[in-house]
Length: 114
Image 1 (tube, rainbow, N blue to C red):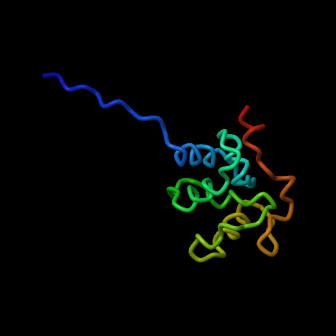
Image 2: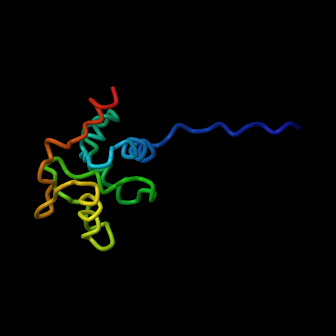
């Protein structure tokens, strides 16, 4: 009896989040909500946050912040200061856990990936 190929399932939401996050250029940031909106799930910013919490090492989770530019995910980095250090290494200015020039370096996947 011939073996049949297992049908590949469509990527899940977390995989879609990771794919978008991998496209964020160095020195730029985006928000959980912007990724959710791009994926057609406007009210799923928290779900994007959960995805970032458990993301693979090749996903630049440090480039995803909240809609005000706050480093709300920093507590999931070891140590928590690592998120800021990674951003600063890419030229992003951070003060008091907030991206200083947020509106200037904000990467909006809905506009950038059109």
